[in-house]
Image 1: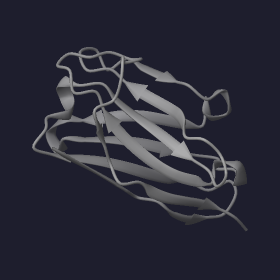
Image 2: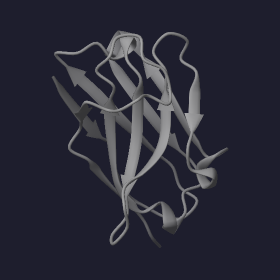
Image 3: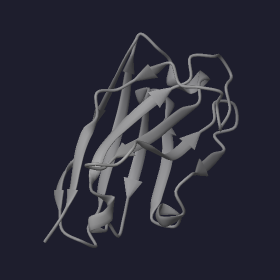
Length: 124
């Protein structure tokens, strides 16, 4: 099982990015998928999660509500995090993770598989 996070980059405040989490050896549709981030000098924090069976979503960090959207494309076996109205405080390495249990929902009891992270830098 491998998760590949991509789509990060340098963007100006107010800009947008779409992160992708693609899986190999694993069908994301059947599992809860989460996005996390870790800013320099800070602990990793959960950002958002999407459940397996009904695609219900949750956003852990209040500051991203209304700006970030998590979604799933089953045909591409990919989960996305659309990030709009980006702020400098969104700067972090973003990771995706999957709960290995079939049919898992958000919030999951734990995450079993992690992607390698993609850097998002919001700066003028």
